[in-house]
Image 1 (cartoon, helix red, strand yellow):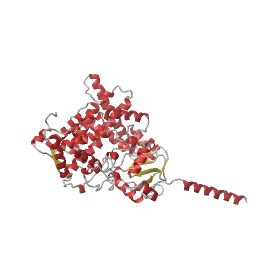
Image 2 (image 1 turned 180 degrees about the vertical axis):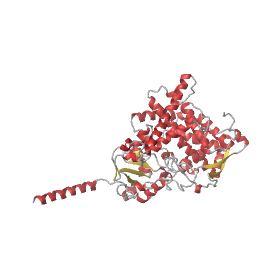
Image 3 (image 1 turned 45 degrees about the horizontal axis):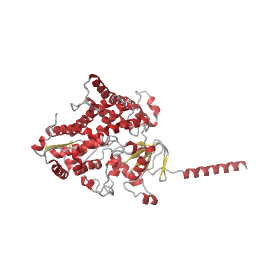
Image 4 (image 1 turned 180 degrees about the horizontal axis):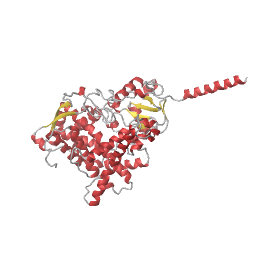
Length: 509
């Protein structure tokens, strides 16, 4: 009898366990994984947002009840399991708003793996808490909607200097725009004047941003097995340690070098007005230094990329230029350059800027968020520690929201129909507590660049680095966190000698 009783207890125990597992919510759907490595081979390495959108269409099936409550648009939730880590890909507006905004308190963590922790701290990777809030308050005071207007004169000066180089020297747009953005941001942040295309502080900004964005990417083996960080760097397969050391130096230099430069200028009595000069006596110096480093570090690459897409879009769409130039001429009469105060009278220029952000979003996949508490959403289990990635490209190319999404059509943003063509800024600058703090600065830069280019010049003859004529259908672009167009050249021609003169009247070199 005893063996029979033991077997009965065992069977009942297994049944109870099975029922408990059955009641436990399942993970969202996704491609079937392989033994040990899970979905490692399913994680895309090129144009990731396109593959994730495909996964959403393939695996993101909806129940009838949810179909009624949340009509399907670009896709649904998809789950991948990689070396024990859960990746949740969000491709629909409703899911992204609910999880990253409404439930942002538990969906706004950042990856704190061994790689990024070894590189250093920054607002991009800080967890929500007192240091994060202190930095965000500094951002708000310097770059809020009202505060940003005091920056426009510096930005306009940088734009005009850039256009002179593009017109007079037919300079590579990457070089000219990088100097424009770096010059404006460094002037505002530190009172520092950029005097060459290979300026040390501009290069430092690029390196600092690259360090954090690279270390933050999913897939580092050392994030799964942190003990590997203790291995000697001379061992095979420990190249990540050499990267960490280099990136840590770049991040630290970006934090200290420009701040110390301002401090020395203040001590000598020769400092010019800047954010750093205002913050030099801030009660939290670490927060002030980090905020300024991240303004010119994180904003450099994203604004440069958006500016490149703007120039390329204009070169490929002469009809857009003609309509925009007519609108500007009606306001300025060809006698002056547009200003920030003219923006309300230039709705088509504003629409061009919005369409650039929609057509080829600078960050097609939002920087990954981390779930800090286990959650359940529409019957799916979202484990604590999951990496959540919002597919921004998928939303901005949803044909139900943006008809003919592959077409560059600024006029779509002039419609008053709230059901279609929503403001792409809602998605392009991040979500919840992690929304980009420099969005007002980037937006103003793009407006001033677009309006000044179109007021004075015509952009044409876009060709690839191989001298092949570019068309909207032949465009190539990079993969990774920030997606910029493949190298290209174009011609910037003054519309008239009178308008060309506007690039020099009242603006110093």
